[in-house]
Length: 151
Image 1 (cartoon, rainbow, N blue to C red):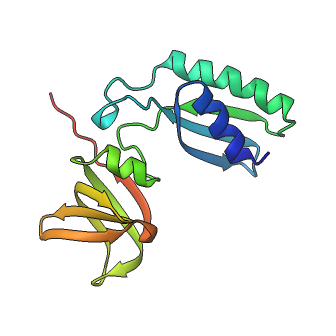
Image 2 (cartoon, rainbow, N blue to C red):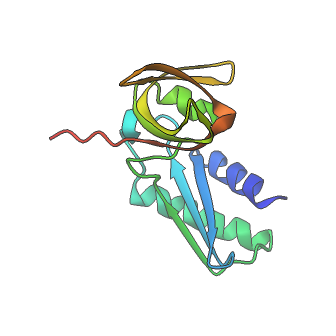
Image 3 (cartoon, helix red, strand yellow):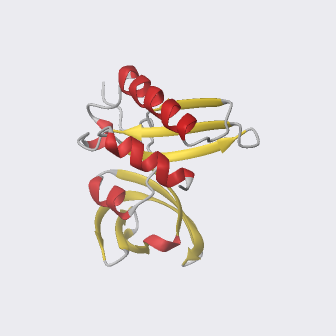
C-alpha cells in the first residue's frame, strides 16, 4: 500500500483528519499533521497532546507491520496557520482569511490574501481588498489560514 494512502486510512480510522505529511532528512523522518474534522474555524477545539500520542502510537504499529523504513515519527497539529490542501478544506474554512500563492500568475499576481467566500466547480471565490477574485483550485500552489488572535 502507498504510504500516503496507509497514513490516511489509519488516521481517518482513528477519527482524525490527515492534513499534511512531510518526509525530511532523506526520508528518515516522517512528520504528520492531524486535525479533528469537527473542529471549527481556526481549529477551535483543536488537537491535544493526547490526540497526537494516540495517533503516533497507532501509526508506529501500522508502519512496523507494513515494513515502512523510517527513523523518527512526529505527529502534531497543523497550527493556527493551517495549510489548506483539498477543496473540502477551502469549503470548511469559508469565511476565514487565507494567504494563497498561485502556480501561474493571475493578472500579473501570484500572491493573494483575502476572505474565502465560496468554493464551487473547482473555483474559490476570494474577497480581497481590491474586490472579489475567482481562483482555480488547481492553480493554487500553497494556501494557509491567516491566524486570527483575539485577546
